[in-house]
Length: 255
Image (cartoon, rainbow, N blue to C red; front, side, top):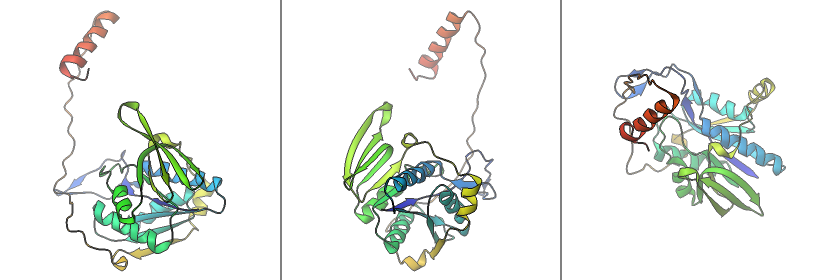
């Protein structure tokens, strides 16, 4: 089974991120493998154990530094990587075209994993655009997966704790949610082995992808400012509970 995992290089959400100018961040912060993509790589590794002879290929788009994230994916189980290198910032349309072209250039996918979203842009578009370009069904926020007789049965989480189960022929694209698995983080030997695994670098220009008629770009970034005023609640436990209910109902309006 040929398993591709699309991964993204994102800023660490725990980092102190500074905005430079109006529309970019200081990139001298820690970057890492998108957390949802960790679930995608882990599920790919589980499938490889189930289907002997399978190969996992991690694919990403970005600057040379993105190799570090591909190495992280390889430490978690990917066998090799493909980096579509570009110095430009790619929106979901360009990223999807690059990922689809790199996969089709490399081989025939039996299944493609992604995270359900990235923690930086949170656009949740790229996997659907890849599906449209490759004419493949897409299921996202997966919380369960079973592969039988060349078909995938995927349980997807919806709002309010509800789920819906889909069945699709292979190949297909699955966006991993947090409920899909618990990522098995690499050991030191895994990290060492990943350094020896191959990464093929291709330029974005060499893929000769079609330029989309429209595009998306960041026009401005602003730091999130939260103005919080602590309020002490006093009284008996019953009185405090009543005050909390009143705040949630009449001030926060969440119940």
